[in-house]
Length: 294
Image 1 (cartoon, helix red, strand yellow):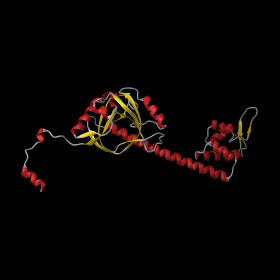
Image 2: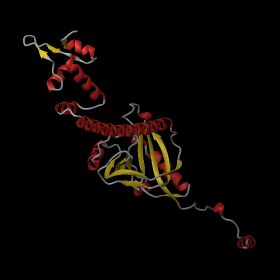
Image 3: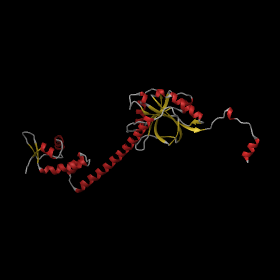
Image 4: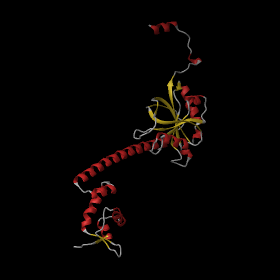
């Protein structure tokens, strides 16, 4: 039976990189049996094989090299049980995080697919639930820099999560909307997703009826859509209940073709009734009036 194995032979036997074996030697978790003082060649025996198998097993479980080194410094059944318990807890935390990421990716895919096929120039009435946002009130000229206030907002709420498609929005105050002044935003916000932890205050867009319309192009193309939305609100007997919401679903982060950009305008509305015109007036019919009373 062979007594000594070169580092290359061990690497081949265990399907492991030679550089990894050298690194294990350097950090003290797997020393060779002997090293030739003249050539510096490392030689291993079967005594190292059991230790290397243990290392490979623990690495396959995701155990860090630091923990593996601590285990070898104090090998004991209690120690290995604690090590595996800690690793199980870490694995469950990673699984939870992966599931959160999976849900977020799924939502983003749904958003993108809807945005790619969305109809533009059509006003829709939607019953929307309350939505949590992190909001920064700041005057921002249309076409101005949004990245700086967005970075400021993220720093205020200590949010580490990446900003994804459909999460960023801007707002125009209701008073400006009624004045047909669409050239300045009065705030920027981020939608707060359930899986994310935010360090700042959270506001809520109100649940209720909203009128929405989509348009393609940059924010500079928004004015006709705002006009359409306001005219349609008046025609349907609505008044604006709060400020507007302007959410870009497709922008330069996803395509270099500005004609493919898609933004959705949303305004919360409250029904106040339809006004009467001259054609709605009818002569007074006393008999019909009495019949209605009876």
